[in-house]
Length: 342
Image (cartoon, rainbow, N blue to C red; front, top):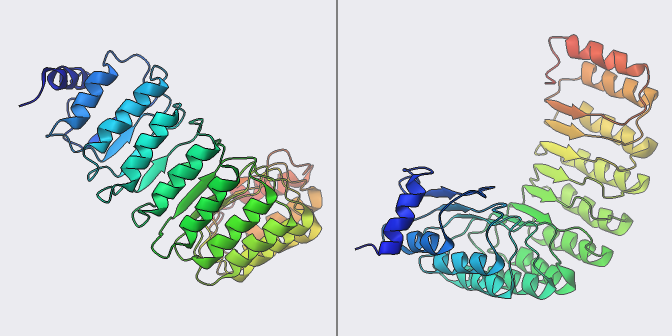
């Protein structure tokens, strides 16, 4: 028998989508006008007939810290079904983090995608959270901790998680302002277990030559099958870009997306990029080079490479580059039928 709160909650949910529970997915992202209370929502989650696999609460403006904690506590009552949890842009206080840790430590928990961007988690909370993941790491495939205060202890625990032989994490996005030393340690940890990672997003972290060296070692590893590398606004200097793209050229067949926006390619880095695009094993589909100081000569070289070699490239972002009249040549390339750029 369902409780009155559960019945009332189900009636409210039916006003959004009467098939929510049938499809095992509850999506309340950016929903700030719902009449349903958190108490009713918790009752629905705890209902014996409910077996949610995806629960999305991204940017739900009316949910407070204590309510987020209550929802995670409700998920704790039946952890075996949940696979995707998105609480991005909802604040989590200490009780919410601890409830989440309890969920993740549960041996029945099989969460594969955990999205915690902009949740206000402090250093101790991040350390506890990742420690919980390390105790039960084999199911997790995607982790987003962007704009949370990882701190030294949080990064150390992430390194331990990545080194765990049962860890099969495929997508990792970390918060900005991670220290140089910790980023180097992170790249080194990835090198110890490189075969699973498919997406690495370190955008808005300052990457110096020491970090780029470790990342380059990872990319050269023939077991590395990284598909998406996002380094937007990482302040990478010419030497770092040169080493990075040279490493990609030594193992080019897996990469599908590369974002180097707002970094300094330099002459040698750009030449390595041309070599990468000319490599017949390269299957890059998305390339973002916004504000990378590519001049007319560089644009001509890029256009020549795209027109002379078979390319898989579908998306190319060259905004805020001083390409001058050479842009006309690139436009002419786009008119050719063999060019696959969209």
